[in-house]
Length: 167
Image 1: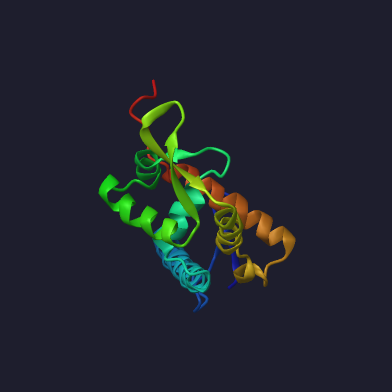
Image 2: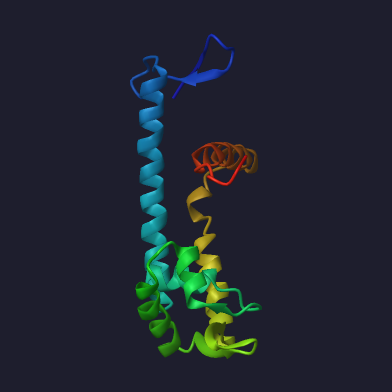
């Protein structure tokens, strides 16, 4: 790809065929490439999580649990943005694998909390490693990776939904 100057003085890229691309075309190509990158990352993560004996859903659940702070299943459901009835099956799988255990809350005996076991802490660290896999960025220099990180942060901040409770 070749750099082109824009009316604002910043660089623009020409398309693969060497012709100037308008903003809509650039944005469309960028979105498609980002979707491709996301699919590659997801495929690699899913394969690595399977190697740990986890599904993507159970891995996300384990990753959300704080080993230092037991949490009620309803809070986990809220964090994962899923129905509480779905959490029961996920927690059952994690419990059967010995990664979490249900424990009566000492401050409210009516409530059971989810506690990450020692094995769960070990597997959770592996899940964190899988979710932070950087193999895909091996071709980038440190400077390019820094720029990419800044750009991704910038657009992800724009993508955040506004909260109703903000004044």
